[in-house]
Amino acid sequence: MFITFEGIEGCGKSTQAELLCRALEQTGIPSLLTKEPGGTRIGAQIRKILMATSNRELFGPAELLLIQADRAQHVAEVIRPALERGILVICDRFSDATVAYQGYGRGLDMELINRLNHYSSQGLKPRCTFLLDCPVEIGLQRAIQRNKDHQKQAEGRFEQEDQEFHERVRKGYLRLADKEPSRFVILDGTKEIQALAQEILSITQRLLEERR
Ligand SMILES: Nc1ncnc2c1ncn2[C@@H]1O[C@H](COP(=O)(O)OP(=O)(O)OP(=O)(O)O)[C@@H](O)[C@H]1O
Ligand SMILES: [Mg+2]
Image (cartoon, rainbow, N blue to C red; front, side, top):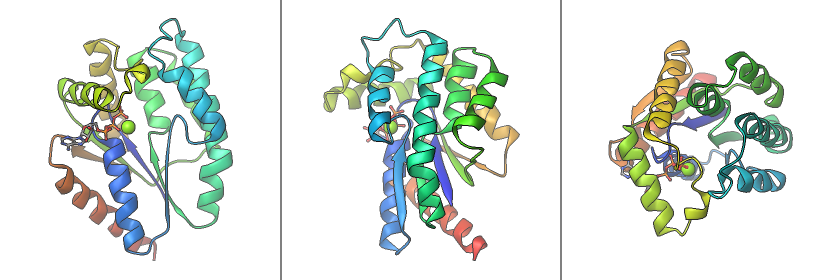
C-alpha cells in the first residue's frame, strides 16, 4: 500500500509521516518512510538545488523538470521495488505537491504537469493521501522557526515565497482533495500532534483491514 502526506510548508507532514511509520513498525507492519524531493542518493543532489535559498533565479519550468527527475528516480529506485516486495510505503510529498506548487502556486501548464507526473511516477497513485490543512501563517511560522532551530535557513527557497503563493498552494490542495474524495483525507493541521497521529493510524489500519 502506498500512502502520501501533503500540505503547505510547516503543516506537519514530516512529523506525522514519521509517527505513522513508527506506529506501524510497532504493530509489526513493515513500512518504508521516504520523501520528495530527495528520496534517493541522486535525488538528494536534486533536492539541494531545489531548496537552496540562494537559488533565487531558478526558472519555474526548470524547477518543474528537476522535481520530475527526482520523482522518476525515486519511483524506479525506491517506491516501486518496495511496493513489489509488499512493503507499505509512506511518502512525504508526491505528485499532488507538483500540481499544488508548480500548477496552482506558480501557474504552470496543468495538463503538462499531469502528463509529467504520470510519466515520472510510472502511473503510480497513492491509495491514501493525508492532506494536513492549516492556515498559511501558522504553517510558515512553524517552518521558519524549525529552520532556525535546526540551522536549515539555507533550505528555505519555498518559505521565501510570498503569502499569496502559499494561499494558492493551500487552495490548490483543497481543490485536489475535492476532486478525489476517496483518496484524500483532509485533516486539521492545527490539532495536537498526538491527536492527529492517532486519527491517521486508525484510518491506515482500517485501510489495511479492507485489503485482507
Ligand atoms: N500539529 C502540530 N501542532 C504544533 N506544532 C506542530 C504540529 N505538527 C508539526 N509541528 C511542528 O511544526 C514544525 C513543522 O513541522 P513539520 O516539519 O512536520 O512540517 P512539514 O509539513 O514537514 O514542513 P515542510 O513542508 O517545510 O517540510 C516542526 O517544528 C513540528 O514540530
Ligand atoms: Mg517536511
